[in-house]
Amino acid sequence: MLYVVPTPIGNLDDITLRALKVLNEVDLIAAEDTRHTSLLLRHFDINTGMISLHIHNEHQKTYQIISQIKDGKNIALVSNSGTPLINDPGYFLVKYCRLAGIRVVPLPGPCAAITALSSSGLAVNRFCFEGFLPAKKKNRQSLLRKLIEEPRTLIFFESPHRLLDTLLDMVFILGVDRYVVLARELTKIWESIHGLPVGELLEWIKFNKNRYRGEIVLVVEGYKISKKNHKAISNDVKKTLALLQQSLSFKQSIVITAKIYGIKKNYLYKYALEQ
Image 1 (spheres, rainbow, N blue to C red):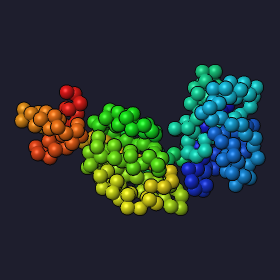
Image 2 (image 1 turned 180 degrees about the vertical axis):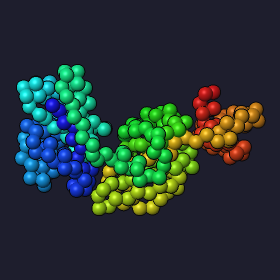
Image 3 (image 1 turned 45 degrees about the vertical axis):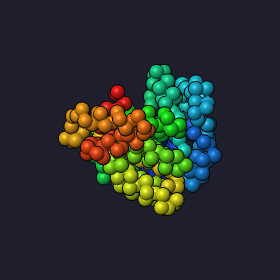
């Protein structure tokens, strides 16, 4: 059978007894990076053999692994940290194991997205995980626009060198008041969990570069319906916006019109896009 085995996202004490037992007893471990996983195995004195399975060879290695399982071997799938498949390799392997009638046994364990969510103070009854936002600004903004009115709590992974740009896009598209929690280096020595309206969070981060180093999870408050969101856009608002757009940028015309009439920028932004 194939075991899906979560591994610690930082603190090695977070590994489960069951995970240790499985990693000790399987015939082979399929690891995202064998060099990285070897450190974990060495720490717990586990001598099981490994093969690499990463995004560049997953299709090729899947058939090899399935063949070995059919020959009677038990294999464990691990990623560099956290739960395999969650923004990590393994989907193709699990999918085709199931299609081949091979039993897939999932173990519970560490997951950065869920760890961040549980400590965010934001709604946990409904949420959606979006992984990493696109690296290119245009694509990133396009995705955020699609999520403007998503009522569920949003969870993103982000890299330190793109964090400031991402938060700027969130300010522009989701609005300065959207509450965002920055969870950094979870379970590690320098763990930090800090939440503020995204406009304030951006300024807080700029004050100290150490505040956006390491592995980052962003937990974003879902869209909340208010009377202002449903306030009809009057003809005066439309005329003002149209006039401003003749001499100002798209963004500037929206910001100024929203201030004049006390309308949420997000709502006005959606209207302007529809036009």
